[in-house]
Image (tube, rainbow, N blue to C red; front, side, top):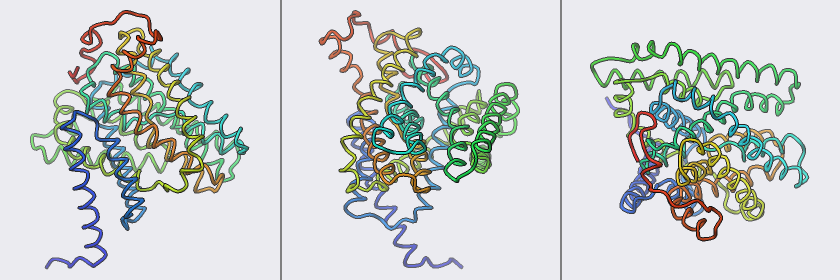
Amino acid sequence: MPVAVSAGGASFLLEVGAVILVLALLARLAARTGFSPIPLYLIAGLVIGAVAPPSIDAEVIVIESQVAVILLLFMLGVEYTIHEIVSSLRAGYGPSIADFVLGFSPGMAAGLLLGWEMLPSLLLGGVTYVSSSSIVAKVLDDLGRLGNRETPAILSVLVAEDLAMAPYLPLIAVLLAGGSLFKAAGLAVAAAGLTVITLFFAHRHGHVVNKGISHPKSEVVLLTVVGLLLLAGGAAELLNVSAGVVAFLVGLSISGSIADRSRELLSPLRDLFAAIFFVSFGLQIDVGAMVGVLGVAVLLFVVTAAAKLYTGWLAARRISGVAGRLRAGTALVARGEFSIVIAGLGVAAGTESALGPLAATYVLLTAIAGPLLTRYSSGLLTLSRRLRLIRTPAQPGASDAGPAGRAGAS
């Protein structure tokens, strides 16, 4: 006999259903205009949270967000092979170092100039450093650029950032809890070692994962992949390693027909959870607290957006033309899941009252502007040439597009 849903449960279903229908309308609008829906989802969450915030348990939002990040990064990993990523990392260590220096320094300097102590300043440095792999993955997919020549360069920077989070997050977590620097460093080294082992296994023994997932029935493949991702993600979080990083590595280890079937089966599920994830992020932002930190957030956005443009340009300079280099830079502008996690650690520990609103405002600015800049990067190129900021002659767009991984988009 079916169990009756309580009044609270019915209210939850009504609220979630209404929010998803709003997202469906926004997705239709985005599809009609050829635009990425991510900024629309973020703004919708901000408006809903300010006008009529739904009574959804915060723990539900956290879990859903974690599942969304796992699916987004897994699907990003599926688009490429581990060999391509390892080659990109080897070739892109220079841009990755520049990315760290140019991305981390503005946030840390801003915290110190605001009179914060060193630990919250280090947290703000992490917020401004790491780009959002989930937003970048969704935007590249929406715009059909997963197969462009510059995309491996973008991925090399993203992978380096995500791997840097493996030691950074446990290090910060221990310091926030009042632990010794020695203990924090030991945990960070252990987390980094675990990530390297996982990367090595994916590189050398990815066929084992393929064999374990393979089955004639799609239902079995779907359940196996989702179960594996959640199990690996949960284990990673218990060990203070990012579940998103592990999901990305699992995606890299899958190849051939299994990669194609995983992409086909999980794409709709990824899009659903991603839409809810982005609107949930907007729901959590206190609009009133944004006013006092807006000026600092805008300044940080301008400085770090320029830094990401340079990083992307540097990373793609050997494999793409001017248009591709600019696309690579604009794609890296958005911040998202890791930045929110980092700021959340500081807020939970009570380190600095302004950290939460500043991080949320900054991330919102980048998450909205990043997809816009990526979508209209060709217009930025034209403007730059008119202002003589870029003096190289125009090149055909086709020269920057081509096969770069399993996708074939242009």
